[in-house]
Length: 381
Image (cartoon, rainbow, N blue to C red; front, side, top):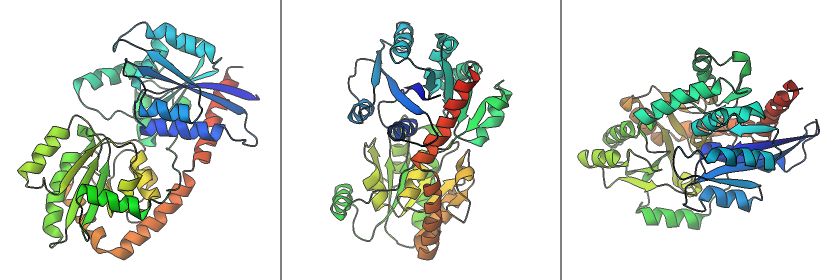
């Protein structure tokens, strides 16, 4: 096979982890890779009248063919003929869906009967009623995919339990590029804008402000860090937006931490925040292969993370990160303060984490995903 045409479906309006991975794949697809067929990638997104987004701007800037499906609401049936039209226009051999909604649309529209289908499963992490319903629909959808790629081996058992054949499952961690250093002027300007004085140590967490991300645990842990740090000036920076924002802010006020906890909202460019951080903290209750973990390690920031989902598949406790149990606020606090006080430990973790970043290169990701597409196409013959 000399050429494979892939239509990737993305739903986010910002550069989510799954979107970044697809964009990295597209960049690699534009290069020549020996022993691999040429892969033509197009991207499909959805719009409810809000116009251009950070994601679509980036797709267009990178010169990737883009198809935007217009929808009036969550259950707009006019989406289905548009989806078929996009698949026809691109002459797609494979549909590559990346989230619950896209998985459902591929099966509900019967698009999988005319095209091969690779579904990327990132796990079930949201616990509200709406998402529990969506997740149940997703279990129905995934049973018909030709291949299910999952971001963590921790999800295999659940997929098999929900009638996905084990031989159709492929584990694929996210890619990460080496970090491009941020200038001193940019770092200084950010610290000044956030009101971070010289000598203040910065703790950073990046991610959607939703219940399963464990941010309230981190606020409780931060209160303990302030006690344990023996007067060391600390600032906690939370980058991201979501439904838990008001709860996080209320808890910060209750614990008298509002002056030292900053919620920045969604940021298009997170690199400057990594560049001023002394420790990155990931307090999640569940995860797949968290892109922010890889980003922090690429930026040379030592990591404290909960040992959930695919996190222990990526890092080893005491070697390239410090891992604690989920909801262990005392453990998060003790590990973070230990890192702040121990330069040699920070240096060792950062040095070892750099080797992980090198192994998770975009080229390695491209070759692995390309092998999945080749296998799926070969099975069609």
